[in-house]
Image (cartoon, rainbow, N blue to C red):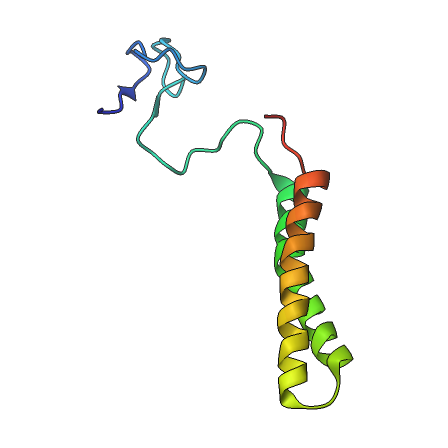
Length: 104
């Protein structure tokens, strides 16, 4: 199915909320084919920065903590680091889903 290119002077056949049939320049027109359009209710501003920071830093910090806590040999440090990273990823997903909910 070809996606319509809704312009300011065209009526959107899908009647999506972003389309506007106003002839004013810049009013309404958008393309359904562009994947980089901002989704309504998505993370923006400080919420996006905080979610990105938590998603990146938490696994790194917990990986280093796991390696330090495991102590001794190379194998146990590696296992501690892997366990820390896995725990960090799971925790980061939970935190961002709980505390950074969108309006969808």
